[in-house]
Length: 252
Length: 354
Image (cartoon, rainbow over all chains, first blue to last red; front, side, top):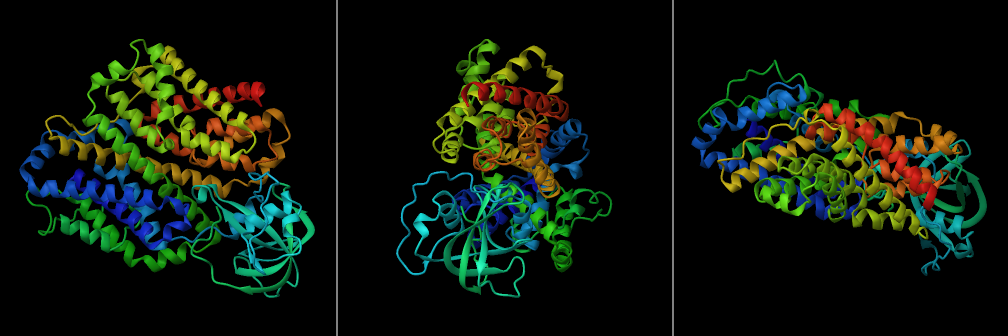
């Protein structure tokens, strides 16, 4: 029965991973590139679970033997001994049910302004000042990370004379509104914000976590992040309008 | 049984804190005739099913109860650690099942030098070939010990594999452009730490600290059945401890105010200790930690090296997984010792190279 419990828990985990990968909801939690790994892991888990359950149907006698004589019982005792847990009831396998419940029933949203306000803007990784010129287009669409890197490390040289459009969520700071994106490398646990201050004709009636698409020009105005003292560049906004949060909210 | 499985997946999932503790008493549910072919002792499965149904029914309440910004952030970080780690846990546990079922113990006896003191550096260096992060290396190290590899060598492998494999080193060089010495420093300090810990175990370690949980008896099963049993066991156990670690890491992430870090950045010794402690707290995957380290620009390179050396070897998530694989008595000694050795190695290598 321990084996059934484990098989069902694995089926639950595998099914959840497959569901996340297939629906695309996984991008709230991890980098988009993880999809094939999630599909593979989910498939392996489902296969292990299904074959375990099938094996039980086909050879019930053998299973009964294992259950009474060695396998299951010994397994349970071994754990009880090692971790001060008793029967199958205190098996750590139960814990896997918790995150799967959260994923399937609550489906927490991607990180937003709460996390962004707690961390300093993160431009530390890009220190080259060798930026290619912007693609054509007027206005040209660039990511918050790209704009901030060009503005800070290239002193805006590749931005001058161009209209740019950025989208991100809003973060309220004492100085005003910051357009923000979380940047992740692997998963949301390593997420760090990149912030761009908004100046110029910023619309009224905004609230934190709203998604906004802004168009404007580079300005030399900067300030410094209250958390880590890093430079935050500004954008001189000419127009702005609210947009729906995109499916893939993180930059990477 | 397939029926139960299909039902489980279509009706989403179960409720939670409940699942952990309260499960004992309430359900003496008699097995419904639909399930279980002969032997009828399916209580945990029944409970799981009941929990799933209760959780689905309580969904509205769950969603409302977790709507706050802090709670949502906690949940997002918690599940993302689990989702991120799960492919690596699956890879690690499948490899460990392969070791348990297909690789004969004599293979390791031949592959590693007979003298444990020599086996340690060989196993440490062998860590370079396992592409992945720390979640996969714990079950593999457990399988190695079960297969008769001397624990000191298996532990050296456990520590070095997530830190010095090519994926992690390439990530480090991408995160620190123009600073190849950072990659070299990480490689050297991590390898040194893993070897010192292996040798320390040879001198001071006591086998009774290692309490390897018994595995279901694989003897007498067909290869396929043995492989499945090993997979089920390792996946649920490593996964369960991963959940404990993810809870801890998400809690620290949301509770510790990040501002205090920046107060200590200027102090040469404190900054190293602070980033080493931060690595323990954050429990970031070793494939991602270099990018986080790179962004901590107000800290010295040596402090950031300590972050990169400590992170793959000691963190909350790993501690829980190591306690699960080798026993708590082992983990409470091994993890702090590794922390001290890793910080010293990072400081020494940083002083010379950075």
